[in-house]
Image (tube, rainbow, N blue to C red; front, side, top):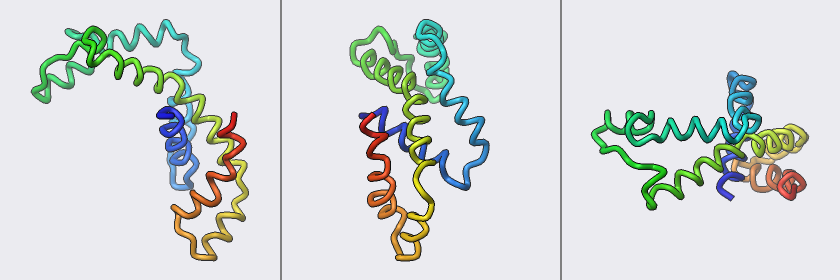
Length: 136
């Protein structure tokens, strides 16, 4: 569920007309999907290393003590959940983006003329039209 929500949010941002560098972001966000699991695991191992990891390096500059992300039982599961969401994020995002681009713009235009807010458009147009995509 978390992966689906985050992916839908990213797809909505990439589908917005004001988005810049759409192709770059789409490629960067889809890259983890086509990268092998072993390569991604090695990268994450280096990112979250207790002594040399980039995450702990950043935290140390904020005055926070290093955390054993993969060894401490309190932090291991959230870290692995974040890894799983990040790994599958791009695939779901591309599927949602395709679904969003298939929604006729006439529906949004009619809703705007009728005075519907963006939230109402999302609830009454976007989500129902994404129904088939959500079922996949």
